[in-house]
Amino acid sequence: MIVCVAVVGHQNNPLYIQSFTEADDALKLHHIVHCSLDVVDERVNNPKKSGLTLNETFLGLLYPTENYKVYGYLTNTKVKFILVTTDLDVRDADVRNFFRRFHAAYVDAVSNPFHVPGKRITSKTFAERVSNIVKSFGLSSAG
Amino acid sequence: MFHQTSFSNLGRRLIGKKSRLIRVTGSMTWHDSKWTSGGVKSEGSKPWAWLFGRLSERKRKAKEMGREVSESCIDSLLTEMVASYCNQFYSNTPELAARRIEAIGYQVGHQLSERYTMDRPRFTDHLEAIKFICKDFWSELFKKQIDNLKTNHRGTFVLQDNKFRWLSRISGDPSVDNGTQDPESKAAQAMSMYLYFPCGIIRGALSNLGIPCAVSADISSLPASEFF
Image (tube, rainbow over the protein chains, first blue to last red):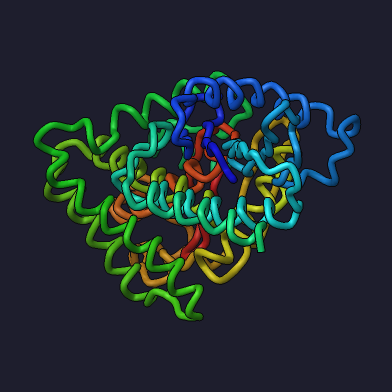
């Protein structure tokens, strides 16, 4: 199950962060997202060490913690997407697919002329779409 | 030589650069002229921003459905936008009108670049991003690539389009027969207003890709145009 997704701007400013848990652990998840930003930076600056193939947007598994796995995605415009999941057995293809759909949703959200670039995304449509994507991620990996 | 003179005579602030320094210029322009900040005037400018947002949205849908936005629609919209800003909102201050038009272009470029880079690997350096602008980005906008790309390898790029679509229906000053425009002439000045919008698009796209820059345009003979 996905417990948290986040969009982080090119100056590491949070654009959108949403957790999907019942428990009151939003702060902890935010902390995990925050930590993962350093890992993203490291990956991008030392592409050889981390074995990244040719500047792909998908950064793969950033780091595992005891309960979570954190995945990252970096767009051409230096916007980072972070995904925190509790599933231990996740297929790469699923995550790629998730990020692709998430990216599409993000692009549609920022194309809204009333969205101010660099500010938080407040669109309800975007939130709805994201929660749909998150829900279907759970289904596809279970099935 | 001609470029040099017409350039300074037009009094544009430009010169493409590599620089952190220009970044200041760039972002100032943006804030100054952002349509949300303009008090009374913003009432007038919002519909344009909105309309262009819708257009980029429509373009996306059109692409998915294998259709495109009518070229004459875009032409009319650009003409009307320039006319409104120059003759209605800022008839006394052409500089301000130019800045506003450029700001709208900036927003459009910003959003389009986000969309068009979606399925691409990340760019490693500036040249790659500029090449993207010349090829894919330009093809998406104008159905053709930039004809000529020059650079001095110090951060200045010259993009030349020999048949710029948005100028192809504008006729030059008939009193000038040697093929070059007098930079002071009314025709050249009016025409230059139409180039602020594509300038803004390029600047928006590049700054979204992490390259702060200044973009200016120059016309030597219609309908060719160059972007710095």
